[in-house]
Amino acid sequence: MSQTVVERTAEHIAESAHRASRATSAVADAIEDGVGVVRRAAKQGGDAAEEFLNDTNRRFQRHPLLTLATTFAIGVTAGTFIGWMMKRR
Image (cartoon, rainbow, N blue to C red; front, side):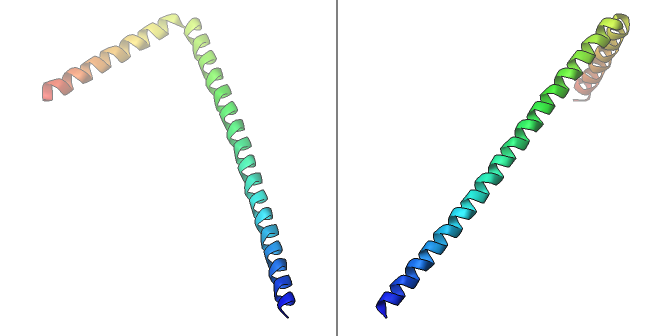
């Protein structure tokens, strides 16, 4: 009888270890998939940022006067806003 209990216990431990191994493997696969998704997203984000900067540089080169006027207008607006905020205090 004690041999049967020991055998059952051994089988139960082996089955539990097998389930734990499968669960660990599933978690590792999920983490690996997540890392792949993050890498792809980072690469796509970097590519999009690089494309945006290239487009912006081309636009600046094609329209230098408009760029200068826009920069001046933004500077005047920011200066006026900062002056107004300082005056209120």
